[in-house]
Length: 99
Image (cartoon, rainbow, N blue to C red; front, side):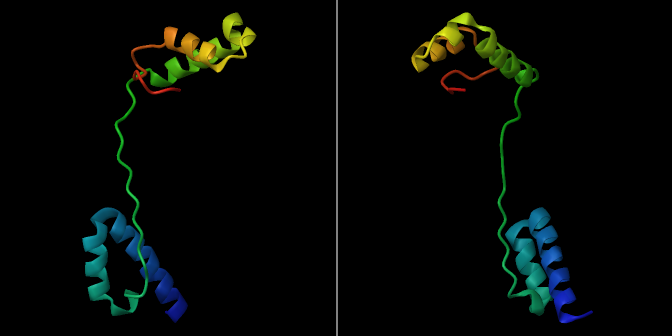
């Protein structure tokens, strides 16, 4: 394996290890493979609560209201549009979070 291929291999392995085992796994990999010590690893994790069932349908119906509502179409006041949206919200959309 050429040095470039070996570095590419270690980069891919470090990505895989860091994704599944985190920083500790990447550090252990570097201890086993000293030539991989110079390869940096940046792991970004994302944690979120899943949306409830039907959430996408509610958002789509709100978008339809924006386009089909005479009240929203005739108003150029953003506050009026917000009041209209707020009046037609569903319990699937958390209160206090503007959409």
